[in-house]
Amino acid sequence: MQTSPIRVKARTHKLLKQMAERENKPMSEVVDAAVECYRRGQLFEAADTAYRRARLKQDPDLAAWENALADGLGEG
Image 1 (cartoon, rainbow, N blue to C red):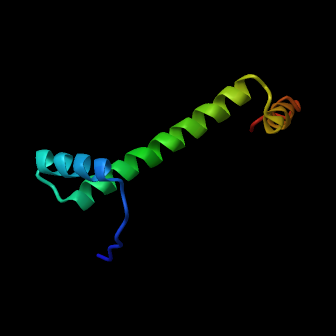
Image 2 (tube, rainbow, N blue to C red):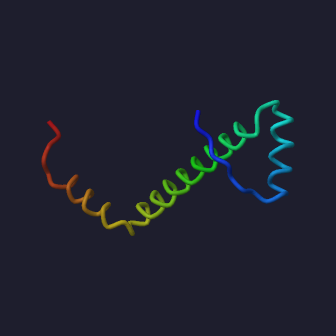
């Protein structure tokens, strides 16, 4: 496994160390888990924004799909 050093604030390092000790894991694993959690949060936030935009019909792509679905052609 290849690793790279990162710089964090002293407070962040202290919190990271405490979390790692509490979980009995290396700090690198705690950082990996935190980054994954943050990545997922951003993904869900983007999906929520897209859903809200589509729901308000402010998304031009949604109108195109609605027209396609209302073209009168059967599915089968």
